[in-house]
Image (tube, rainbow over all chains, first blue to last red):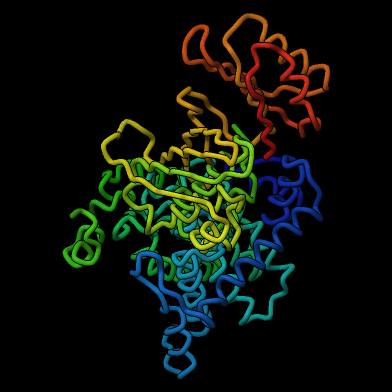
Amino acid sequence: MDFKSSVELLELCRQTQCPISEVMRRRECELGETTRDQVDHRMAKVLEIMRASAALPLKKPSKSMGGLIGGESKKLYDHAARGKAICGDILQRAMTYAMGVAEVNASMGLIVAAPTAGSAGIVPGLLLALQDCYKISDDRLVDALFNAGAVGYLAMRNATVAGAVGGCQAEVGVAAAMAASATVELMGGTPEQCMDAGSTVLMNLLGLVCDPVGGLVEYPCQNRNAAGVANALIAAELSLSGVKQLIPFDEMLETMYAVGRRIPIELRETALGGCAATPSACARCGGCG
Amino acid sequence: MAFISVFDVLGPNMIGPSSSHTAGAAAISFLARKMIAPPIVKVEFTLYGSFAKTYQGHGTDRALLGGLMGFETDDTRIRSSFQIAQDRGLDYRFTPCTTETEVHPNTVDIRMENAAGQTMVVRGESLGGGKVRIVRINGVEVDFTGAYSTVIVVQQDKPGVVAHITKVLSDNGVNIAFMRLFREAKGHTAYTIVESDGRLPEGVDVPLRNNPNVQDVMLLEP
């Protein structure tokens, strides 16, 4: 069982009457020559690391290696605890977790690249927030991770997830598409609605450049993890409400890749343009001296 | 196209902040350490390209040193690897090289010295997503990833050595996935690198050494 596009994936879902997560799990067992128990066990380990990395900065905020970030997740948490949060429960929690995972990553903690280290907060951020608010079981969260994995696999296979190749839209964009699709499945949407949500995210983040200050995975990367969960949530809500998208996922993925290759080299992880080249960033970095 | 696993998407499980500059760096030296008899007492890392520019902020230095001490990419000891190396009496040094630019952007030379006084220089490249490859051993261009069980035979470039290697491997039931010969020049030192799907049989290096033109044999398990 394998698929090369979302069209083929959706066809497999129809044939087997299975959600995307189950098709992806069967593919993994078959092509990875392993068993259902083994892949579920391994994914449970992924979830465990994700959860620990989201929780750690609330207990123990830490400064990043480059010193540009640290403590943001705790600030968000305390702000909400004072009853001052304006984003609503899910988004507030999701952005707190997402920025926390980014902080752990930037301070040399243990994370799961999802699909990259720079975008590692988005998938766990949104899924763990949904678990908090809707009392979702770990088993269903593992299912959601397989769904997210299917979307990320299509991006790796047919486009790119490297900021140096396709800009931030390929990292945060794809991570948010993964989170959106997983959310739709978790909240009872159809496989078609999952892929529509993925398409929406790629559309809304199309063209986002990769411009890390000092060349480090810290700033604006951490902020964009928060932007990623917000975009994923918007896309999932649209899809679940019945709004359909004109442009299917495969076409948006191809477009994202084509746009990515046309992004100038200064805006693809080289720290030569965008946020990295602003006077304030240069004053802080001092890397060119 | 190679199989993309769901754990290539949701993974690697790694110490941050960068799959190429941190996880990949640890993976390169984790591989390199298997290529010299332990214990390693001294190591010098020469960093090129983007590694040379951002190695401190990405923890590339800690990851390289941690990998050399046997820490895998998800080992939380990586963050403390300077202290651990000092405690173990491992002498280490990092030298950024910004003059040589005709290399892959994330390249490192690792010069290792063991207690017996043997030295080994390995060049590795971090390719992104935690994937790596070794491209040079003691000045000879090679190419392997360590993803497979790997046999490295250091030999004099003479007729019959490759036949000897394949015969020994065949006698020991090793199924060869890839096999390549790399050499400095005709008649000089050459490296035969064999990659195999399954685990290598215990002690297969003994019969491989049993040839006058074979200088050394290394077995690397993933």
